[in-house]
Length: 463
Image (cartoon, rainbow, N blue to C red; front, side, top):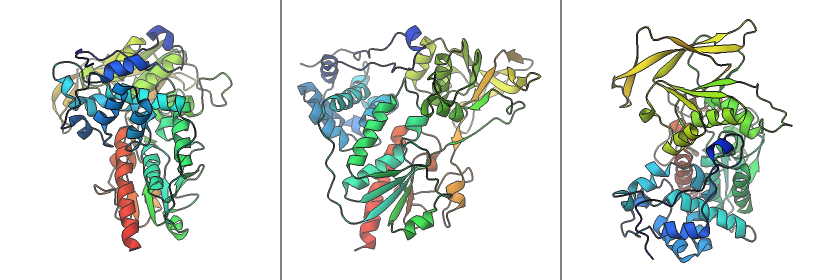
């Protein structure tokens, strides 16, 4: 029966003042009845506008139709034809600006909760599936993937399904990229990431960790080993700083370091070998999803007061609305229209405060957002003993500096065309290594596009 409610089925969640003291997943997921009820809000539009908003082109109306029938396994099989990481996408994709923004039900109410349904279907499959995916028939050709993050894993999975022998080279000791070092456990449980990776391994994907391309082995050496095409999906892990006084004090972190210590190295566990200095008052500088993750982690790690310091207003924050709302519910304090100018230290060279100025919004800048302007005489000091810089990242220069013929942008991104082809024959690239820091699903879309182009390239070379 059609469900014409204007509102989505709400997502069950942990209570805010309970969850801000633990690292268990915040969202608890739909029940079967809730999933079916939400699926019945879908009108099954013939022109399928939601699919056009999905970077990996999941057949959204088709999988939702199966959820309506209670055929959750068939729904999963439909999703997995397009998405290599459905349980991940259902949790971290910004559906509100992609597929759900195109949903017809959103014209006079809330759109269908496509992301929540994808998460439900993927979780149901993980709980009920028997056995691993079947390995495709091999075609006798080899491809290499640099980086085991979202773009690399997607590219590897698609190539494996085409029959290629795929080897992934990962610099860290664990595959997953930003999924394991960046996104916190309470948003994306790491057991789910590892399960998705095990599914890729079952397709024949080989993952080699602790290998730094450009140091351990170069792109040229990979070609010499018989790889016919190479995909670079090494991400953008080089943190940026503001270059203000005091950034070298003890207690100043990049968001990358802070989240890596917390998530990948499990600093929140009592027996962790990688602790984080205890802090009573924390300032997180930035307004994106990474800033929200860092702030919410700091709260869970015992900070009494955690501030988000952002130079524009809340409306201009690039973070997902859901992440902002969750942070507010968890008593994160938002200091918008404020900008740091100096980090203050004590006699031990430890952070003791952050000097800020108040801002107001002027005319739009080149990004289209109103430019922040300093208010005269507005300096003040925020009493903190930890500062986390979350103002963006750029690609590590190692690969571009060790690969002949690879053109890059001035800011470090690899130049690639719409198919992922770089200036170096046989080398493709995608995700954050090309665009700079972006979303998981956009990186996956780039990996998917590149896999198709790599297949066409290898076929043409062997025709």
